[in-house]
Length: 229
Image: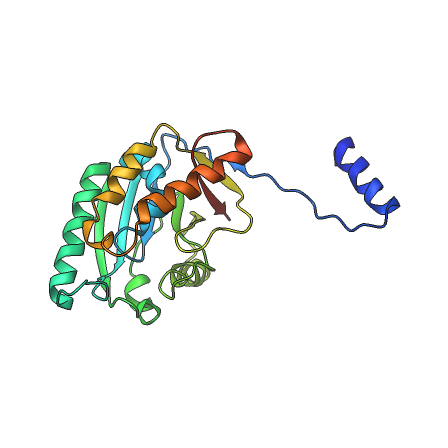
């Protein structure tokens, strides 16, 4: 423990306070050889939660869309909605120049029932598997963390670290951050390509606001925050 921390801890004892230990996240250092798998419960989650990561390292990323997105159709039939959302997703993946992308096609809203499909994914070659955190405020978003933790226990060939991003709820204590200041406009363009999802909610300005606010801690214009375990 450094002298500043010791001094602060000692003073808190003298004054009778139980002050919390201040934690500061670290830069996420991604090597050119790192292979990254990003899990998106719905088409656009990957761009909202880690579009900056994709803008900077897209050629090192594989992206798997977990559900068919049929529930958010804005008046279209479920079948039409699936086609629209998958087409938007494919266009965004090409925009980011990702290494590979695929569709798992679990039923939207019922991802919890799709473990048999999830366990077929081969994660053995990845350094990081990136997904929404386990307290994100959507019933499909909390599932990948639970699935991946279970799969790591069942399959001993998975060496990848789990990385959690934020979509519907901020991470309470991020461990790592990525400076996306130079990539933020690419992220903005990617989110805006999901035209079908922007009719009711302006995701773009809201996530830009979060990324801008997050930059306060590290004196950067924009950052994405993560927990890596």
